[in-house]
Image 1 (cartoon, rainbow, N blue to C red):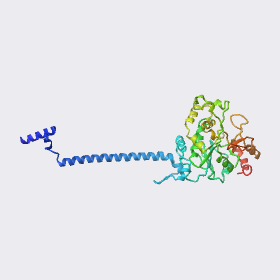
Image 2: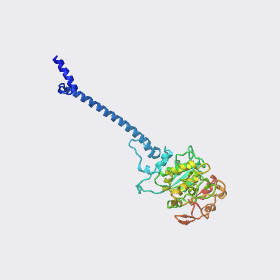
Image 3: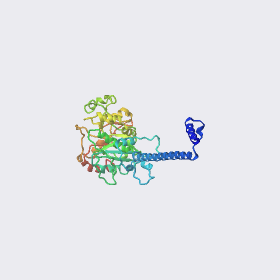
Image 4: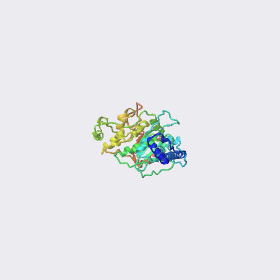
Length: 397
């Protein structure tokens, strides 16, 4: 009875909170066991958190290094490395040794439009002229251009946009060797021509020493030697993009009223596709998506965005930096949708001199000059032989 009474009082006390509550205090062994269980539980939770954190960190690292690092330093562009501690050198960053990469156009344009905040370069920068060749296939005048470039390494860069599956066949000593950029299909008169232009500019912008950018085709030739061309472009205060607006079906008639209010009829411009740009304007064109999208949507069909997009964009925002003329001569005197084409029978010293001094007057750094054209088109492959014979005389290279 006494034992039962004690048990009864103890149970009652536990529920009522009286003195009996201290009668059967937990034994030290039970306290230690409960604490151990809590400690083990906390440790398990902590270790699980560590494992989850490490796993997440590894996934983030894999994503960062496989995605972001490839975007900033494509292995094919900056050179592959099989060491764990390998990193691109500063030299390879400012002068990518290879042109191959796996970047999409949006990634490439974003990467190429990055600008350093510092005014000074932490290396000895010698400005270069980037020669951007757009062609569907062969470049018949590579021997002429190679002779033009000879002896001037370090002052120029070459970039070639072809059909995606075309392989340019030149010797390793050629300035065109391994200079093809990742390309896409191009259709005449469509926005894909602008895509190719921006692709060429963007790839050339990856080299921080490229200061001037001139667009050329497979039918273009130089009509002066390299020193003359280099000094003319590098020392120019303006870029050379033809930009005008006249009331004809081929110019004002191509304007689409749906481009308003971003582009008004009075702001619409036309010009030759064959431009020359300084680095500042090249970056702006590569970075632009707003006005490019307007042209992609509304400049079709029979609008020819390659003749309107850059002239209009520069007129809208950078007109004071543009000379409003081209440095590539072409003969439209015969009429029709395409310019005159010149073959072997046309090539003489007098013909080259006539291109150089054709009576055109222009300005250079705001001063009048008769030296207006550095390049010429449109030449047939048969013109190569006679032109090569003139390199040591009138062409002077």
